Image (cartoon, rainbow, N blue to C red; front, side, top):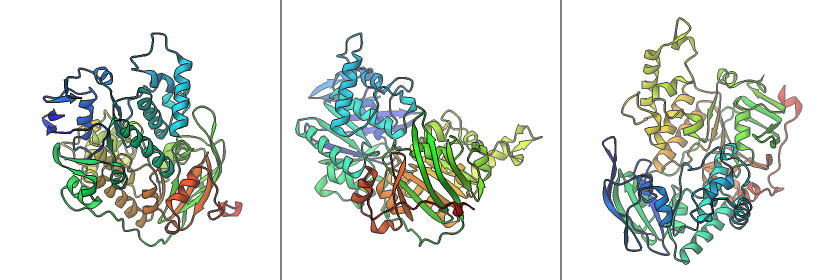
Length: 511
């Protein structure tokens, strides 16, 4: 790709960008959210047309009018926000766009190939499940399987290890390296600098839509790459204060929760959470984490068990009941669940406020002037970059979307924060910011339930760690400084280690 230029609303997302991938090479593309990585790759995939610049594949000049042209040219991409059709099943999504399939789709053959790929790569998916019923992590697995199914010549992998255990990630790296050895060109996109340095042959950094430079792995370090991305030195360590937990704010006793397909997804989980404590829930996506989070925020009713917030039984409460008790929810899907993409900043902030007396006129009409003032203060406090409060949220970068959601959910100094994948898909700067905000909120007295696949994040922030597998807690780590990623990985895969037992709550602890 040479001299690629693309603008949106007068802002250049790509400005004379050059990028190349050699056969048999794993070439990482780095940059903050909004640096132009996704735009560049969307041009390569035929989703966008560049204003200027050329694309050559195997020396031949190409012009893609649509994604179909790119697919036919051997380009395959796993997008950060998955390009899947929610109402279709897994096997239908995988087959969609395959130029070699006949008009009558060979359902059984496609399902068999999906199962083979799932077994080979350790990406467990149900071929018959509708995509809308799957968790974010499960949808990512479907997108990876679809890419592998197509056998693309140029493979673009955007955050491919986000939902894998360390063991599974190492296995996937072996597969990627084997593909490179067979002559495929691999474009690897990740914000995890350790894995970038492990797998890359070369690394290209973009900043504000322009090339900063390309370095060989041997010449790179985390500090150097971070400085290239941000333009200044970045502190990687989070200063985690000494644990000083206070009063119990959340108590979960033996809850069982069904998923969308009527299957048991949370099977008798018990734990407690105190003020000034971060309890990390570690596990591979699809093991009941999202159903647990929804049960603790009023979005899904448990079929048995109890949930207490500050001693009050809220098991059957609705989302507003949880909000009134100052329970905040930061979902993994910021574009679909956390925010309403076509609404503006002011309207999204109002979602948690509009019914309150101080934000209404005559008890019925929304006081938009007061909400605008409140939004302006939050946007400034959380450094949400935006042209105006009337700007559609869908046009913000991922990092600014996350900041906006944090601003709304933390504005009332919550007692309990349920944070699911709070830094998923964010760049180094935004990730560091979100983690600092969570630690700061903990110091203010909140109890934080941190649900994430990112073991580095779990170990960096958590005061205690509970590992979930198959909807059950398989072990609780009281001192995260004493556990290894290998041990956590084994527990995430379902192995119960005697070193880390489960402490079940007694009935009298609920009183």
